[in-house]
Image: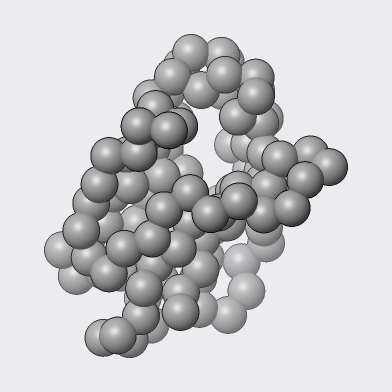
Length: 101
């Protein structure tokens, strides 16, 4: 299972790629040290041949994401967040993006 993330540019930084086996949990992290007070944190994924899909957004709260059997974690200072996939399946292989706005 191959999870890709975009090259670091601008306000956020992500790892270039992650790989895991089906059913083995993985954390996709995102650093955003220049986040502004009113910024929301967004997480998207883009499955092969599809448009981007919004998975979650938050200001500062961590939250459960039952639709993808995952969680969104946000640090207390909001300088990083992570999308945690507890039991990824082959269908979760995608490009994962975080964004601020």
